[in-house]
Amino acid sequence: MLQNAEQQRTHPRQLPLPDTLDAYVCGCHFRAQYRGHGVEKVAYLLEGVHPNDGHPLAGKVLKLCKEADPEPKLFAKHGESGVYPRIFAAAPVSELDSVARPVSQWNGWITDLAVPLDQALRQPELSREAAGRCIVGAVRCMLRATKHGHSMDDPSPYNFGIVGSDVVIIDAGRRPPHEKEMSKSQFNKDLRKFFARAGLYIEPQDLATYRSAWQDASTMADAHAAFDSLWDSVAEAEFSFISRAEQPAPASVAARPRTDLSSSSAEQPAPWHLAACPHVDDAESGRSSRAGQPAPWHLAACPHVAAAFDELSDEVLEWLTHNFLWDKLSRYGLLSDGTVGYLADGHCAAEVKLELLIRLTTARREKICNDSRFDILSDEELGRALNNWKDDYEQWMHPQTLRDSWTKKQQQWHQTLRRSFRTFLFHLAGSYELTIFFLAVPFSGRNLELFRSSWNSSVTRTDVLKKAKDALRQASGSIQDGQTT
Image (tube, rainbow, N blue to C red; front, top):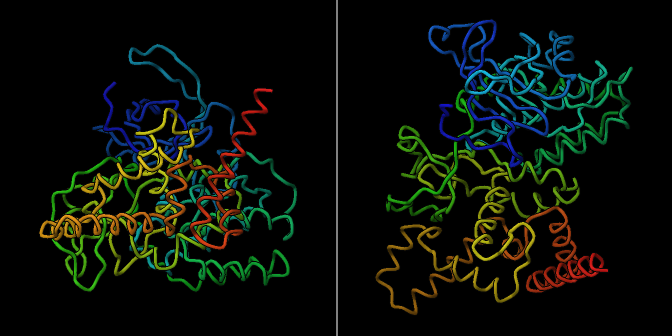
């Protein structure tokens, strides 16, 4: 009944259990703290409760699943392969309420704690070499898993993890085993999906290097050799960043009021304030980077992007990341004081950019729409939403810009406000038109595909927005007419 502070979910789908559980394993009491959840499984970190703080299972992960799952047997069978984390126990689990009455039965198993690969890749100070080692390690895992008759049904980065200096598969999925190793052509579809999603975390030119290594291999044996060689070429010391990534659970996210009005470096573009940013503890927020800028801070989870994976095609995802979310825009990322500013020594992953776009536009839509999940704003409603957002300048304008504006005349202030707001909307996703479009309509794979078609067929950027909105309204009207008929 006593719950820790609510943790940010790794996915917006409903969690079937509380964030914090009392777990009794072999007569020992542990506090189980939420780590993440998927379609069917929920993962908890087992924390020792005195006198069990030094227990061998303290610090391990308890996984719970309603249906029988092949994962514990697969991991246990190939525990020495280096492809999967260890399994320490697997048994039926009884769920009891606060007065010890039986509620339900679960299948449970206890495994090694791993840092999810997406969490590691999201860190703004991550070196390109370390990011590359993460991607190469995941591909190497997938290749080695096929030798055991296993291929993943969802090769997304969050289904891989880091244990020590190794990358492992932490969610096996439910695809039935195959008797022999897959051919290169059979495996190509899985790897294409992985590379499309990896593009949210590493720059396009680096991703092209790993794609080429796969394409240049004639056989699976050649691919094994190529990625083993790439893995060996990056020193294990590159994984030293994991000590920062490994957290008890994803941090909560909420609006944080701005109080620090210190100016940014004259050599760097001024950051803009973010309306929804992570809480940062006192120790973290006290750190500074060069030129007086606050230290970069990584977003612990991107649940809206995880949900979008279910409906985004690989082709559309790659188009979005390569055209808008990388290049110069990646140098603007989250800082520990709650602003988004220029990162002198790092980058902001495209996944974080996309998460912020969805969160902020959704929050603004909720102020206007009856149902932000489906409603399409009229031009009048869109104008009102934009004006309200612009007028809420204390939530997005950098404090130094705001302070400088106090000496301006009214006309100069309005010019500064319009110019700064347009820049803010551009920096949010690398396209002013893309941000406006997803303020007018809900974010979805279908709507992103429609925007892409409009972008590719338009001569000017002004045409893009009008054409995309008109096409969506026409399509929505046709759907409604068909339902009425």
